[in-house]
Amino acid sequence: MAEGAFRRLRSGIQGPTPPRPGRAEGDETVAMAQGRSRPAWAEIDLAAVTHNARVLSRVVQPSVLCAVVKAHGYGHGGPAVAKAALAGGATGLAVALVDEGVELRQHGVPGPILLLSECGADAVDTALAYRLTPTLYSHQGIEHFARASRLLEQRTSAHVKVDTGMHRVGATAEEVPALIQAIADDPFLRLEGMWTHLPVADGETAEDRDFTLGQLATFDRLARQLLAAGFDADIVHAANTAGAIAFPSARYGMVRCGIGLYGYLPGPAVQRAFAAASNESLRPVMSLRARVVAVRTLPAGARPSYGRLRPLPGRSVVATVPIGYADGVPRALFTAGFGVLIGGRRRPLAGMVTMDQLVVDCGDDPSVQPGDEVVLLGRQGDEEITADEWARLLGTISYEVLCGIGPRVPRLTVNGPERTGPTGPTGPDTSPPAP
Image 1 (cartoon, rainbow, N blue to C red):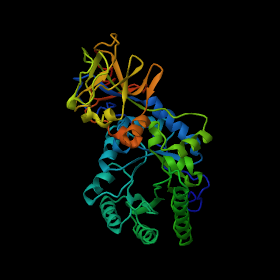
Image 2: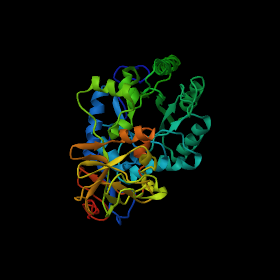
Image 3: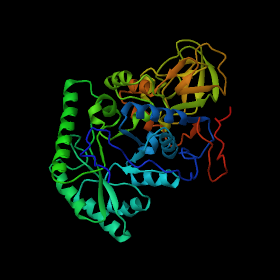
Image 4: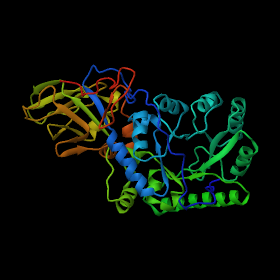
């Protein structure tokens, strides 16, 4: 029997069982909206996902990478991102909800899938049916999974979550031994892992760093206590993207990377640590694009859009773009001075973002025409707009920007393997909308 994780703490612990090849069922896995009636879309670069997974795996080795693909892959498309991450070296996946795990399985995603929160009693049977690994942190949760596993006559592996300071979900360090004893006492349950979460691993202050180190010290003490009591687990994990990069001691046998998988790093301290640890860069996975649908020339002083908030400084070509705040382009971008890319140049918004459309001030440039590509996130020519830039303007984080791109914006995969789906061997057409 393999040596357990508590005994091998910080010593190159093996993570979840590597995925076995499975049959892919339908890779229109990122099509969150079926309509293609307007030219606005998000491109999802699957090669960038694979690259990012490979880079992160190298940085944290000998620990292994668990790719966090909750929230429909942070808005990128869960199943497609999951497959690309596994291709890049991730050995397991993590989701927040049972439904998210079910979606992955229904699209042929293999390998371990960890539920990051304890699910309700009504979802236990589904979790077991789709071979999802539960996280448990209450006696009630343990009882639900034990009862269902007994009826199925199968043994269920589970992870126990420890609350070391996040104070969201999880059992306290004092409660954990009794929970693990309850798992050990049930013949239909097996302790596979124990984990915690680090809320300020991306922090800049000495207080943040001390808090994170204190969490890890608490976690280590608990692991030693459990080992002394005769308990052990295969997998111990604590680090999110920030912890995995900025706190090497937090890597244990497995790390859970979310935002890094999508090409972003949470904060300057983590960015500096990553630059010191790797000579490769992460690549943003999502770009947000549209096409100009109308162009008009307006006189100086005209005030386009709701509220008539800003007069045009001069006679200007104003382009209308069919995407708005219902799609995740916040109104606050206008007041923050945001501009889009058209023709490789930054162009400011000419007025307030509306629900379905925005207007762009193209100045005295008569070359802008209906059908021209507009980039809100991504690269065009020598210019690039990132989710970090949006986050700075909006006073938020890149996670919220990416997850906020709405479901009626189709996700179109690029640089991925041949698509397979119920509509045929290549799936539906995924070329950008024509002018």
